[in-house]
Length: 180
Image (cartoon, rainbow, N blue to C red; front, side, top):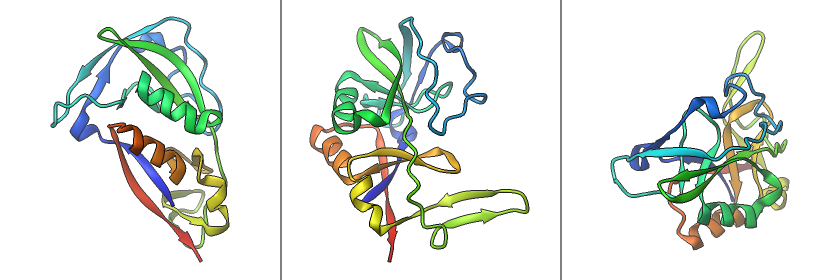
């Protein structure tokens, strides 16, 4: 099984922090496999709680993709899929360390015939993918993007199990279908 991974912003809120700490605008950076430049200074964040007012382990920071992780979440994710993560910056939330990470792996596992794709004369937008069944072993222990979608992040079953077993809060998972 593979999953589309999203941050549950409604329930858990977001972070606020300085925009000038990051050297490249989020809209100018190529997020498909190109590591964002590392930030040398420690970034201070403030948390704006969501509906549950429960502190998550992974946060949304609107000025930066992808995730800001607590130390516990970072350790679990790095342990389960370390080659797929790039550490952009270390930060502080109150007195706790947090880590700004980018998913840098891009895997070409989409079955384009079975996926939902909006097609236009000069480009296409992947709305929701179906993955090639033969790639199931490849994606099991990975966190990745797919070609043509800089905003969608996916996770394999082994990584999700590690997150679930550790009780990591903040993600929302949508199962991805496999083509036959």
